[in-house]
Length: 207
Image (tube, rainbow, N blue to C red):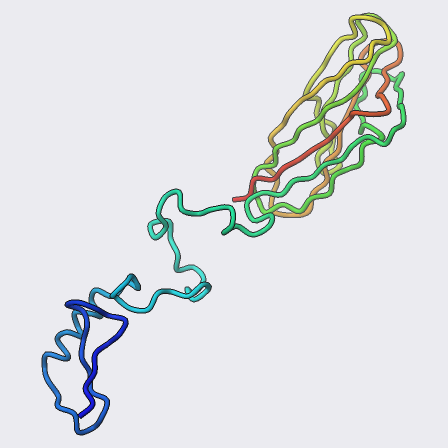
C-alpha cells in the first residue's frame, strides 16, 4: 500500500490519496478532498501559493488587493504617469504685433502619446516689456490649434525682466498630441522673451 497525504493542504483540509491501484479506497478521502476544494484560495495550507505572472489577464479586481499594498517596486516605468520637459534655447525673442496670440518661439514643442489620462501642464516664461504698464499674455497651443491664453501680466517698470507661471489641465484622447507655449503682446511697445529660464513641462496622469 502507498497511501499518502497532500503537502499543500494542511489541518482539516489535508486530504489523503492513494498512489497505487491496490490501495484501499475510503469515502472519507473524497469528503476531505471536497472540503479542501471548497476552501481552496492559495493561502498557506489551502493550496500552492500563486507564482508571479500566473494569474490570467483580467482576473484581478480591486477587491482582491489589500489597500495600501501596491508599492513603487510593483509599478513599471511610465505605468501611472509620464513626464515631458522643454526649456528655452538661449535666444531672446521679441514681438511688436498686438492682440494676435501665436506659438512662443525658442521652447520646443512637446510631442506626447497619451493613454487617455489628464495631462497637467506647467509653464514659466522669463519676459519684459519696453513700456510701463505694457501688457503681455501667455498660454498654450494644443495640437496646433488656436492659442489659448491662460495668464496675463503688466510691466511695472520699463524693460524689467520678470517671470510668469501658469498651469492647465488638458484631457486629450488616447493618441499622439502636440503641446506648445503661446504669447501675445497686448500693448504698444516691444514684448521680449528672455534667453533663459522659460520652461514647458507636462505630466500625463494615466487611467
